[in-house]
Image 1 (cartoon, one colour):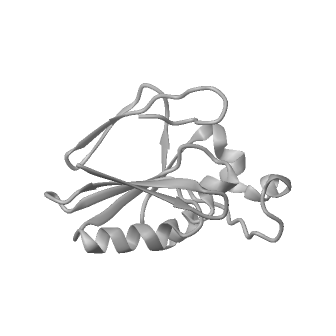
Image 2: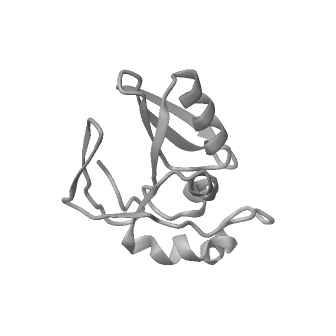
Length: 137
């Protein structure tokens, strides 16, 4: 597995790509501004298909580009505790950069602590933690 990090605007939030070139698959973790373009280019470069976007939590800087992944047909994973932030990210407008467009995020798969999930050759064990990050693995 190859792990790639990219610090992205507007405030330096990291997007992470987990690539498995041998099986031509990739998962992306978090979607700051520009994450979709970066992840798509990286996946193309490594001849991988993006299999999913995992959102660690619903704060505005982690979900800015999530709608682009969903619109491209890429499944989005999130934790149910952040449903209000995924459905109505405008709730976070007072914490975001003025004028930034925040779009609702359609979560296709809900993650919960202790759940083991397998996709292709990857096995994930999700855990929840209090405060900021809802999902760790």
